[in-house]
Length: 73
Image (tube, rainbow, N blue to C red; front, side, top):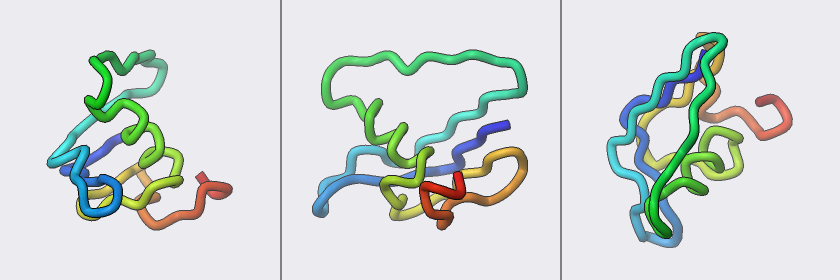
């Protein structure tokens, strides 16, 4: 259902996520846990299309949504 492949993203030249991968299947529930600054919010922003990854792909329901605008996601 949701798949992130080798995602690298960050802000103003600072890398927050590097080579991140995540897979969530149909009917699964997941949680993102971690200390401050570990990339939880950045991951969600990449998934929702609010932040473009520097590298990698975001697939939702089998479609590449990496460059899709937030309203399409």
